[in-house]
Length: 147
Image 1 (cartoon, helix red, strand yellow):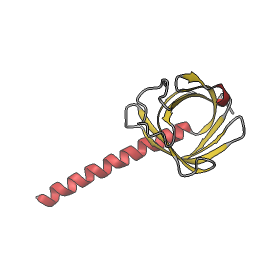
Image 2: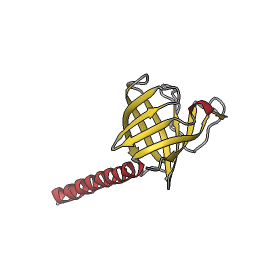
Image 3: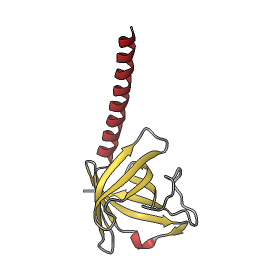
Image 4: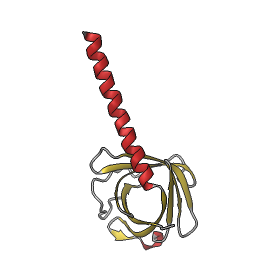
């Protein structure tokens, strides 16, 4: 009987993990494409210098190219079961190599909202899509580029 209960518990845990993976894969698929930054905010102030930048998402990888030409590449890790949904950018290349941005995201149609804590800021993952003075948070609104 103990083994049956243990087996049922393991099956439940494995199916929950598989369900989380399925949800993350579904959201990754929905995020694939080219995105343009249409609005940005840092520490409660507009951040116009990054408006017009581009992010390309393919599978679980991201590639950011800023207006100034800086390129950032790495892996995306999603947890859509959290409220709000969690997104992590794990940088594999560029000036932020081996750094991680922890954030939240919301996708509605062709609009993607992201709010994240700067790498090494020692700030917690944001819980809402806004920034305040000295929050060391960034908020981006992106629009999907049409093919």
